[in-house]
Image (cartoon, rainbow, N blue to C red; front, side, top):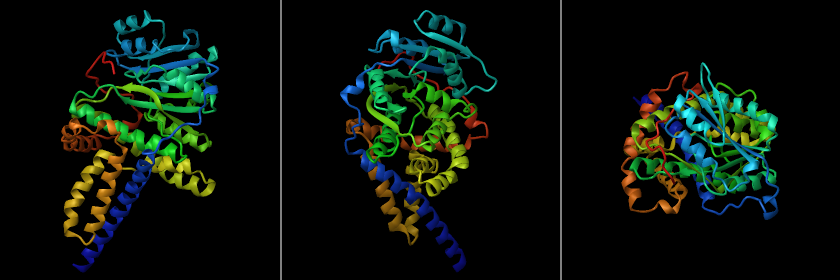
Length: 397
């Protein structure tokens, strides 16, 4: 019996250290995000205005793509200096007709196994002869706020080859979409603003991104069959010592999921991608850190180790109860308090209102959806271009 308690004690210490390292990591960057961060971009960087290709890859996004493409044409940027291209994978004929009446380029593609990376590479190949300076990548439900292109142009002129805009929710009317919006902003605070405040590269988020065109084409050249292409781009960029800038005031509005079913479907893909990258790159992060002193690469690889934020809330709830019967109960309590403090610091002040409390009641539902998502993961999860159903067709932020 004594040996059993010894083994259980070792197991508990193991999980305490594993989860503790994650909580400390999140708290450090959450605390850093409280302070102002201003990119090293000055007035003189506003000129010249560079040639920009706005790429919108879509897969069966018939309900929203026409509105997205139309909205992308409204930027306060010289029309002769930017071009919108929709990469249409498996769109209906009537959708293609609706796109072709707009002043945009429509590139029809078809793949046996569709991925966003394949669509983007086709777009880059088609656009290369036109000598664009920059490429901006949007999801099929993204709307650029006024001034977005001018802001990323200034960052580009300041010398940044990779720039992440501030993706934020355009719908918060449902309790679940509000919860998802808050989750997005926590990620912005910790993995983007907090990182930049401490001099570490921002994380990419898959859309609302801008790149030096030639550099992006080079980085994407051998990325084809992985759904989480943004993570692979990050690893490549960081391995080369480049800095990914974050522009908090360059807004891109994104449709958030409004129910647990779509949340679970979306997270199945996300967690599957994370597990793929954890398996292939986590240990490599330590190698790069100790052999080359590449902290940025290590930091990105360490993120693959992090338990999803919503699931971590559930884990601490369970461990909080179990710890009442273990000698380490105070350690679990301290860790839980530190984690919730990190989340509280990372939530922007505008969300602290009466609706927040109502939205928090959806956390158990979100935890259950995350568990279902994990159970649905299979080998092909990290190599699919899937659709997360949008509930609103033409919603404005």
